[in-house]
Length: 112
Ligand SMILES: [Zn+2]
Image 1 (tube, protein in one colour):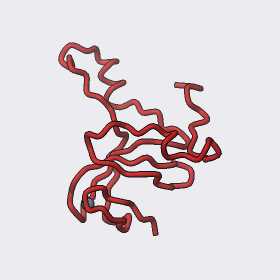
Image 2: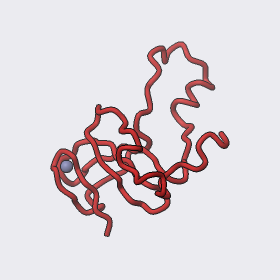
Image 3: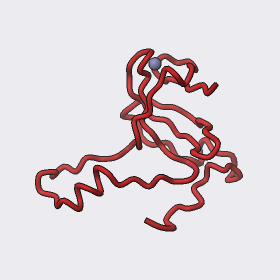
Image 4: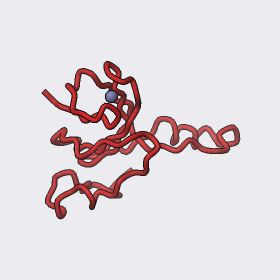
């Protein structure tokens, strides 16, 4: 059983209470009516899908119902931390152990 920490309820709860909401920190273009179809496709559909560290939106559906963000390792499924929606993306150096974690994104910038 996977436990996920809800930053609003301030406790770890069973994964069955949560729903994944996709990548976090995806900024909506301010001029969305003026962008091309290709730019809209990039914003709306295209995701990196990295092996390792990812920042995701989650919702505590069967709890407080609120959205929050989490840093998770896609290989081990380990949650490093959760933080409230609207808070800035935390620096990985503040929660990873000296670079020996599998969460480090080894494919970063390798391909698109
Ligand atoms: Zn909650």
